[in-house]
Image 1 (cartoon, helix red, strand yellow):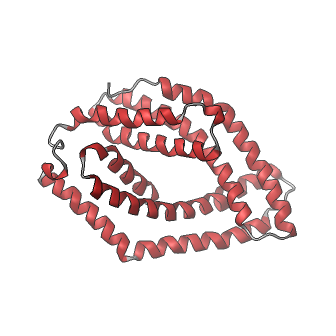
Image 2: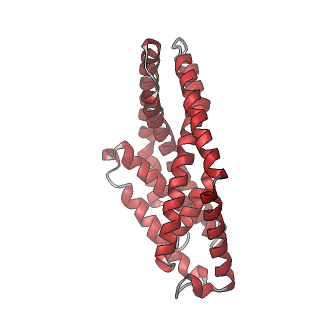
Image 3: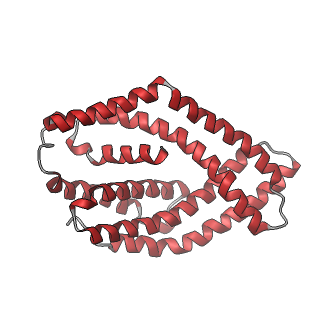
Length: 249
């Protein structure tokens, strides 16, 4: 569901130049709020189910059980918030509004804007080029980017990948696949860096006592090492993305 929310936002942002901005922006903000809610639950899932088990295997003698027990409480709270949102009227209303809007477009293409009657393949290059160049700009001065800026690059590349996958069928399949592969190579490395930063951030939120402090320090050092190793591979992956032929030209 989180991936579907993100893909929906990517589609709305892709077609921003040719649709009613007031409508699209309203939905984008509501989808973003839901995305943050799902994102918090996802972070606690990754922390509890992936990062802590990996850290336990790598660190051996370090006892991370105090952090595990405390983190599970926050994980349950995050899941409860997601469940409450899904069962709420606002979520259902948003989904129905977007579905109705899309169905209107099938029946009346002009309802989306004055240029939506053009063939999609003719519009796609300009739309894809816009988000592609935006991602390339965010990747400049790579060695100077902060954790937040790297996360912004990751989000931008995810939008590029979603849109390339959605519109790739309009163009030669192999070229689209190669481009998406270059995107994915960067995203895997940025994902490792993001999860390492997220691990440190969530660990700091947990209630502290003597046992927690020792475990937090061990986990922080472990996550910093993971991020450092990933950053060594980042420049090569980003270079491959920047030089990957765009399949829509």
